[in-house]
Image (cartoon, rainbow, N blue to C red; front, side, top):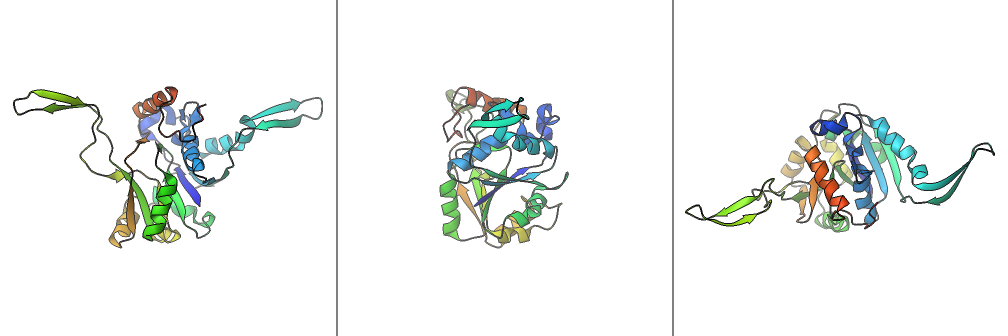
Length: 261
């Protein structure tokens, strides 16, 4: 099953770094967050990726063009016509298709533009800026069992600030650090979709989270996979620093492959 990853947005809310590189290339622990997302899927045996490029897409192309070399031990023999000898390659078994999906194309439009690479088969779809410890195999099995066109993973995000547990007379009984929000479940990405979902997308200007998902729900073709574990988007520099801190402390819940580098 192929995995489609959105990597074409401007990342304006983290412009401190996105003015130099596309948001999915912002690094956590020395690796782009895009790499971390791909490693999550790869941990469960999904290694065929289609990446939707837009803003500064050439940066992502250059990264993967040199990935094998950068992750390998290599000898350059300049005495012998600059012969290149690879000794040990430490690379994942990935197949990566990079598709230019337009500079200002919306999320649905980007997905529609990669239709020809999906080969009319079920596929996974997610954003290039969020990590989670969601069990991808369980997600796929859930999708297969309910037999509808679309599955969206949902989470209950924690509150940004701690909360006081107060009594009737303003006594403080306790303190909760970053409790769950208002109880609502939100879209966390990590979709599983049938190829027919593409037909719900009109054109480049279609936002996937609006008409397509609304109409899928209206038609009774959308189910949610509730995830109660870790999920964190990287929307702001604050989010980036939080993820970086987890990685440095070797407490990153999304590091399912267990190889910190």
